[in-house]
Length: 84
Image (cartoon, rainbow, N blue to C red; front, side, top):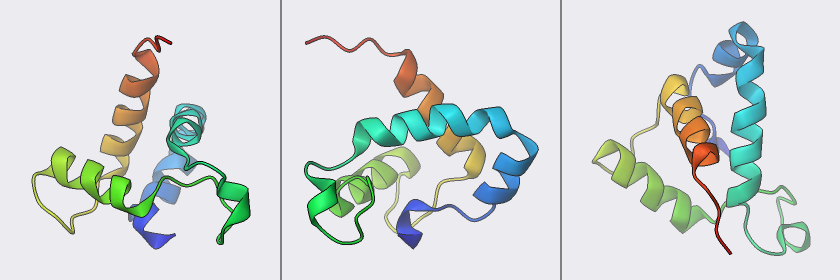
């Protein structure tokens, strides 16, 4: 789970509590299928997908996104229309 948490994210959310809503909504949209059947029993995205998203966003592998960048990306993804 530490791969999904950015250093300073808790401190950022404590100072900007309204940012937790778009972050949690975007996270819910990225959850893996049948997340309740496999440990850690949390609605997290698949590990390989998360690694891909971080590497394309930051331009390198193994880097962490800043808390501001995570919230900004979450807000952007929620503004996108979902067509089915």
